[in-house]
Length: 509
Ligand code: NGO
Image (cartoon, rainbow, N blue to C red; front, side):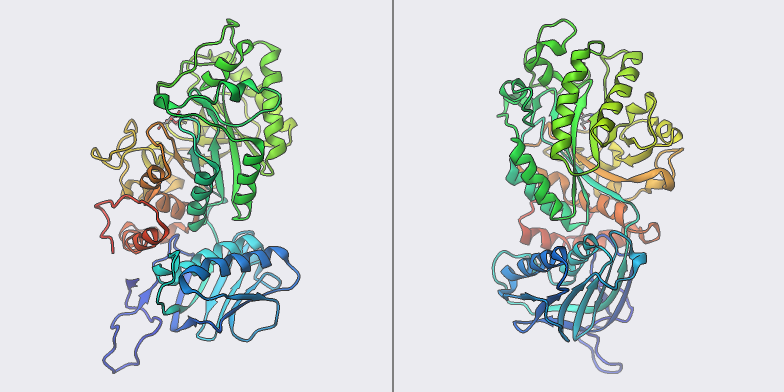
């Protein structure tokens, strides 16, 4: 909670010796577009119920999600009902303000009533994340806590700045189980992220079963960086992850990296090599040495099989085809290859995304370039494509925070929390302005990352910074304010079992 001096909840009347002299606004991340604090608080008790509109199953599901979130710490079995209610927590979509859009919401708390409204269920889901943060951190505990469970009176009207607010997990350099991936989804959902980009293949491992090409997983999944254990997702497991994400209003974006970063595929299938000879599997971390053979039709039949199976499993609009660091592919070949793959992606009804190198080729306006380390994204924007911003020196969660960070790389520099937060997407790449930006994404490459605890150390607190850049209006950005709000989130992460890095830039509460 941050002293603000503004009128605030639970304030003592003028003239009395107040318990709280300054008022407080809850430490919300991402900062909502508009917050108006009011007086008093709503108290969650065993008498509170959640009421929803009868007709909508998505709203009912969000009601049950909210009840399940609140149950462990409060011990209260909140009933979700369609009964008309005069008190309690009310979720509705029917007469919400349409200007809130697909993801916006309004959350109004008075001492009698909590009303969460949104034109679309996604907005309700994001509003629930705000509601969590209005409660004390102990609400996140898996065990019963004493309370009291007070929600400050407040009126929040909130919409996102960007449509794409993503995180990427590299499951190729090290493999992560369905359970770990779902925990990562839980974590990004806390901060209203709506895209999970899964980097499914690379030189060191192929991580998704493709029925037409079983060798990809029989051999290509057997390895990981440093000789660590491999692994892969069955199609049923991938579908489970997609559904888990979907229930949290997160779209899974699968990436099959090509034509470079393909040693695992080349080792599994000799025909993909121009020599016809498969190289050995690879467990190092050098990049840029592998390339699919660009000429033969067999290469494109393979790609069509892989992308076809993946498209069928992926309800989201996007297939990411990598395209980065194809240093072993001549330029003309690279350009021809990307054009072919773009057509294959579109034939499967999807939009192509690639790392910004794809802007060397002719892009369709519906294709999307992901900026990481060059000015090529401007060429994509000039071709009419939208851009996702993941500047390595700001948004790469695998960069060390500082020289003494035990995990991570530092080729793009050290990325402390302030580096991750204190930039404006619209001013990052000359030639790529607000209009051309689809959103922001924080990639977590896993050359040095082996466990969920490792993921946590690298992702938190920086993931919260990137999430705020994606959601909150530009005018709310202020590092000093963010670091105060962030400090209050450490205790939430402790409750949630998130093994975050205690950056010295933050005065953790
Ligand atoms: C680069 C490279 C990845 C590495 C990562 C490590 C991109 C787009 N390609 O980012 O293969 O894992 O850096 O930080």
